[in-house]
Image (tube, rainbow, N blue to C red; front, side, top):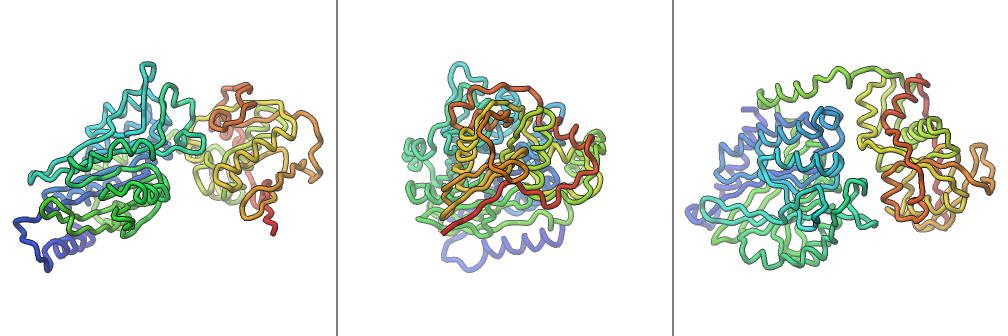
Length: 480
């Protein structure tokens, strides 16, 4: 076994066999390994398998939890003939014991989600998802219980985030006939579940800030294992009697929670993160499987060139919106920052898979005829989601005047810097924005049916080599 894993073994033995006032006979030791927000990244599964194998070699009670967002972010998985299949196959081989729903679990649609849940050898749980008789998704269980050989019970409740629009951060089109209840109202129904569990765990896809709020308002969870915010909590966070954990994202880390239980009570708890990139001897069987999935020549097709690095939301978003505007022949095109999923396209050859990494959601585009005051409403709504600029644009420039990060004024200018004339403009946005933004006039658009990735691929092929260095079209001016 690797030097790193041997060091790990020594550390965990010291933790559990060092000076203690408790009899070994009366003590139950439990390890909970956990990941979150893997987003279809499969590279480190062979190293995760090595970590799981090592802990199971040294301890009797070892569990592996996922806190959601398994899918979306790697074309090898997203564009697989059966989308998402590689992730569940690899998770089964670890094996995982449980996962809560993340918002991106819906990205392939409800039918594919049903198939992936059926494929999994572990349960998916969520207390605040409610289906009805017309839902494609089958109603998930809210809760799951594990019992160790010593009779210690771990009760696990799942919760999914909602945004300001009262929906999870996925396309509302994927949520037909599903209600996502407010997690802070839902959790009240499960307070008594603590009485039937020795350890009560919230498997949360709410984000770190809401996990803190949850611990303050509902302090009956012993542990919150979280996701969604991609937070890296090296030693966890104790807050109001609850231990809050989260292990970054993209399968860079595996969280390790070590528990000592005496008389059915937690007497010792310790969290740490293992950097999976540091594991030297991965499990070869899993390495071979990863290579099989990665062997997709079509995704490595060169579609164009970048003359310089295309870096950040401004440059990438400007390229994407130029592609939308040109293809749809509109005056203006918008792209939400949340749909820009990579940080950079490096200088040199651009591969097909890079575009699918940039735009993994398969959004289509909706067009409108809008006057400037309605364009400002769109910009204002987008700013209000996170109280910051969240849009990229082609066809105009936008100046946002703010005070204490609160939007005070929106100035629209043409590409030459002149005030935008008052007339109707053809405007394109993606169908996520059209359905997620609660603006009445967005319900009256025309969906073109054209896919975002295809539009970007065709644009890159036509205009290579591309140079977007320094391009910026949305400006924020903070005033006192």
